[in-house]
Image (cartoon, rainbow over all chains, first blue to last red; front, side, top):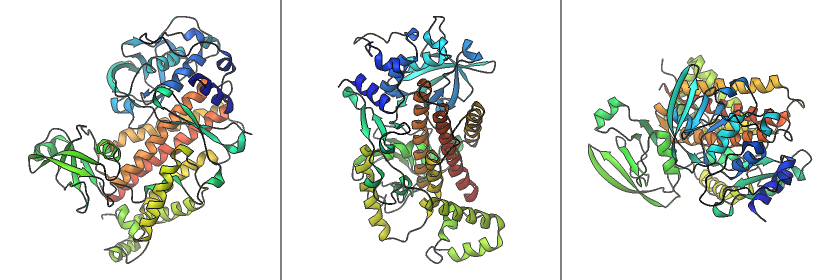
Length: 299
Length: 199
């Protein structure tokens, strides 16, 4: 079954597929080597395909209902905390006017207009679908009368989950994962009685790796004291940790990845499995050292 | 007066098992603010215990089950604090939002209220600036779990809105409420810890 068929079938199962998606015969991808053709006249169903297939995210939820500000730009309904847009300073209520140098405004008539959809919102989604994770792009927006341009570094798109439609098969849900060249794949949720009793999502937070680390951002004053301009300060680290870090260390990079904030450093460290070795570049007593570290049982 | 840190408050769960627990208990007896915070933590635990279990997707099940079993073994061999339980209560509460019965008919006003609340919480979080503060690994782990879940909700919102002809406003309202709950928990995780640690 093709990727497109899977998407349509699963959307249909979840009761969310627009009928014209299921019936459309349009190929879902542009020929290799050619850019996406912006065809908003095909309406939101084509944009849905982009949403389902895209690999990178900007970290914002754009308004998709027609509104008076559509003549200016795409209205930002919400910004994902610590996501790419939030890090770049974009806020809810901002009006995005350009993405990667391309305007979100269009004067072409479209089915979307008849459906009371926001053309700039749809256009922004289409533009964002061209992006890959870790792309750095310029985003122009308006906040009140102020015009701003920021650089946004895109991130991986998260998995997405659909609740089954009311009356669906046993309250099951379906999940999509980005699976590389084979595209997204629907996954059936287990029934409740398949699960171990009393299993809850938060339980795995108990004793999670790195819980005993304490980290601080390196502000200019701390930076002068420790002799560093970038990095994350280790306030305290457990002595029995296999990480080898000590209080007073400034972490400069982990396997070449430079942490910008304590939260970022935690995300980098959490990307390793227990027992997996990696290198941490630190400033210790004003001298640069490279530690060979791993996440041990006690981390 | 310096108030007790979250860790000190949590150590009172099992008096005598943590160094300084007796002094912390004495402080709590004299400090209305810390007493109130302790009461709040106990209430969270009680609410957590009353929740239905969550259902992770099958693709994550082997990983989750392995973690669960490994961590259950670890817990048997150590004194179990309830730090994670109390802090994770916020997550569990908001994750259960989708399962709670909502009014059958959503209207535009309810939707707007949820969206407005979401904006207000985003603004509060931005003003608090957690990225510029000291962060411990436990808090950071919980916060990142919440952020990841918000990212998923945001994508689901986008899809639901695109298919609005088939997805009723109830579905959008449920997602926006879930987002608000997650954001609320995220603010709570950051601010509660900092205010109690005096950072």
